[in-house]
Amino acid sequence: MPQLYDRIGLGYADYRRPDPRLAAVILGALGDAGSVVNVGAGAGSYEPADRPDVAVEPSMAMIRQHRAGGAPVVRASATELPFRDAAFDAALAILTVHHWPDRARGLAELARVARRRIVILTFDPAASEFWLSDDYFPGIGEIDRRIMPSIEELRGVLGEIEVRPLPVPHDCTDGFLGAYWRRPHAYLDQGVRGAISTFSMIGAVEPGLARLRADLEDGTWDRRYGHLLQETELDLGYRLVVAHRGDSGTPGGAPRSRCGQLW
Picture 1 (cartoon, rainbow, N blue to C red):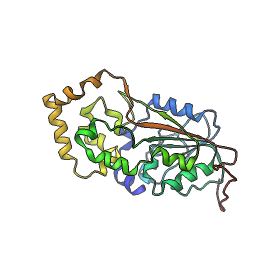
Picture 2: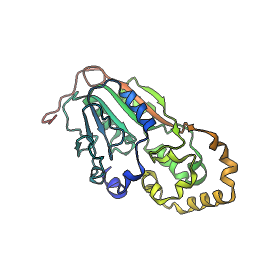
Picture 3: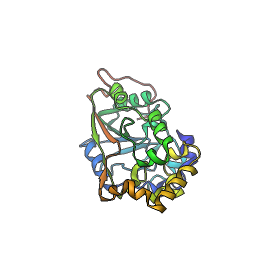
Picture 4: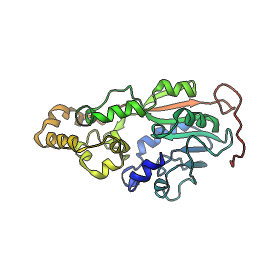
């Protein structure tokens, strides 16, 4: 969805800094894959630095913020990857599938270009919502249920998958939606919200912000959710999905050829 990130992506890298604990889990899921394509790469978070890697990103605002010294970037859509079949050992997609204009086609493209495995970080829309959407921004849950792929949808395209919970650390440095679950004041910061795509989709945010501000000032939030301050990590529904591939690079059969590929 280049239009969205061309509009909201300025300054994105200031708030969406890769968290080393999440990075270690993602790197572990890639295993010994010798080459990786990072699809929907954004500013380059979680790209492995220890092996050949190519980033794919449709938004110029995000490409301009790609980390210095990072992977070479190809401007393209997940639904039309400009690579030959089985071009990479692994395909990586971090909190991006819900932005693709055709999820099934994009997932099939991951399967086409990955020889050995696919690693996806996503949010399970069947998971319990948390206080931010329960009490202050109910539109977030409605949007997530509409745009986030279900686990069944992922399995239907990718075949057999492993689904691993990915708890969010209380001091997560990657400012995605659930990152500030133990730091509620952060959601009052316009910069924080600007780096979270969902806030650009829910319309007027001021009523929810006013409720949150008032509840923080009068102690209501502490009475309801103060117990969270004792937790170091929380399962909010983020899931690491891993699909192991055959040598064919496509599920259950021979690879699909595409003409004119550059890679």
